[in-house]
Image (cartoon, rainbow, N blue to C red; front, side):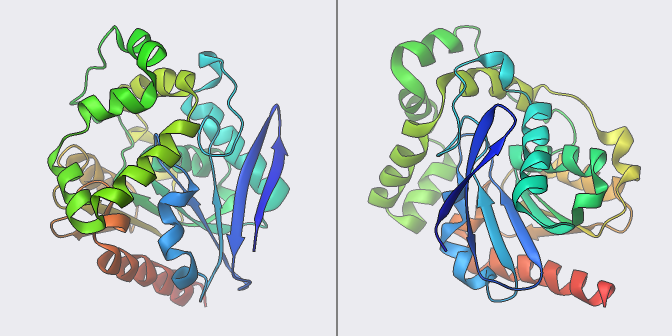
Length: 272
């Protein structure tokens, strides 16, 4: 249905929507991602939902502030709440992937009126650990760019899975599209905040909406945090996608879509 821009505070958020169903699903991408992370599923999801996907600040087509202090998880949650107030008629279903799940958690804790249900995908309510960003990261990114730093660090089993499932050309084009648009200051500021950020585990009991926690079986860094998420939110369901890593919507699209649809059908049933 085309791309739009919404003014939220000092920034503009670029977003798109698909479908015109009565109920809305908002898709929130992760660190170094963009709304295009979900584009192969827009049509399928739009069969039962108005689907909205937005780029977070510093990513995709949304504003790059160039100011590291403006890139915090709380700022991203404030952006999302403001975007909902401007462009989305809540309460809605929200799917947050990785950093996007951390943002979605902060949103529902401060504005539960906006969220009908949650899918928390390969994410955490705590610092997942397992990563110590090098102290020279800022200099590396400023000298070589986000793309180069990711290339050096990105030859992982998950990258090989991406190439095997999607093809090397697709992976190359996708990386170019996402990383060339990202604010270097967003990368530098958000990386430590994602992996060494605040602990929201004590507040999970405040979440009352239907919640599915979704995680790839090989996403080792996020499996324990996902288990704690599901245990901490009353009535939450934990769903694991076999053989998947951190982005199963790409590498295991059929399984991912089945589990997302199951969540939406569950929410519709309990809300009937």
